[in-house]
Image (cartoon, rainbow over all chains, first blue to last red; front, side):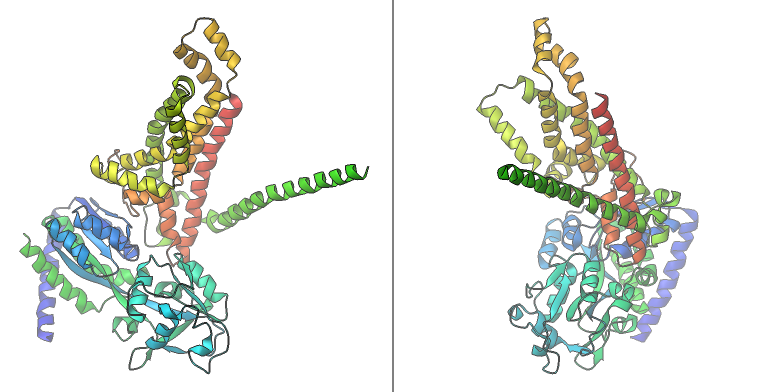
Length: 312
Length: 279
């Protein structure tokens, strides 16, 4: 296993030297079209911005049609890359097959979902997934209304719930991880597509409970209290480390880009994807996400290399 | 006497209610604009206008979105203006007042109330896919033209209706044809009203986000459009994108971009007021 990694790393270095050589001699040009998830957008935007410094004549355009909307265009061959905050669904796979589009899935970063309460909430310091499920599952609607229904020692006060809108990938992911079924939850919580509204809501209500992407917590640490989640072995709070090493389960998720196989015939797309995998670690941190372990990027560069060669 | 006092009291009450209602809207607007100015004014400088979008809020700018908005505005104007005004003239001056005309009229009024995202879906299917224009400036402009056509038509008709019939009658009495009457009398007399309507409709178009997102306007474009078939972004999409970012610097950017967008609509409304007063 480690041997394979070392070989992989060596191959990687050679590869890099090779492309650097071509950089100096011939500047690439063309357009690379990316569309899809607005969650992944900031990373791709950052990569596109930096790529411009290396290859100023390559125009990278990025849309925000959402993961589903992005795959629709991707399966019609209208885009070269697709941003996705969840893996491709069977229906979308079929749509790609119908149009003879094959692709490669690449993980580019992690996103952690943070569970939060008001800073003056001194009774909660952790949740188990079962407790979160008890609070959020559809049958909790109208029934689980007070803190002491979750644990008897907690106060006899109403619990006020806040969460992202039901159209968001964040909501889909949370419900899948906690309730067990994507898109299934109680309906009587305050939902907002704007996470800033959720921050305000939780920060203004002592008996509140909510969840959203970890980047919003990072910007509002003083207004909110972060709650650890029991992963089956121990209580873990989301952080750069715990999301990266996989101990913050189940509330962290990978973010993806999908590469169209016909697009890799264009050298600028190959160059861009390699650049993406080289820099996603650093840039995803800049925009509030969590990088993969660096060996994951290396391994994916290898599989991308094979993918390019098999589609020549 | 008693009755008189009662009526006066009612009159006073209604007056104060009216003042209160007027002030609600104004106060909200002043609070909003004040808030935006406080948040965004210090962010506006030349770099903000000329920079490309960036992951670093302080280096980020609105250049491509602003240029996209201007291109969209230009093409929407040259598409919607002649079509809308001609349709308005036809409906007001030529069409016979029969059931078909009534049906057309009702439909146009209804179209003015259709949610904008529906126009986006229509534009995606007709312009982007069937006409194969792609997610281009032209497809976006055509979509927005459809969106504002009903408003332009209604405004044109209202402006033409306001022209005193004595002018028309006098023109016909001197032997002018219908077209001569329209060209030399009606249009000059109603031009201010028509332009006001068109400009107000365009001010609405420049603030639209939903239909353009559906058509395929982008959030990150590193170049300004160079021809009508280029891809584009617009200011409202850039604002929407920044608002949803966690870092406070982007919120400031959004406020600054809102100021620029407000400035554009204020200038356009100012032109509309100017035309209305000049005619």
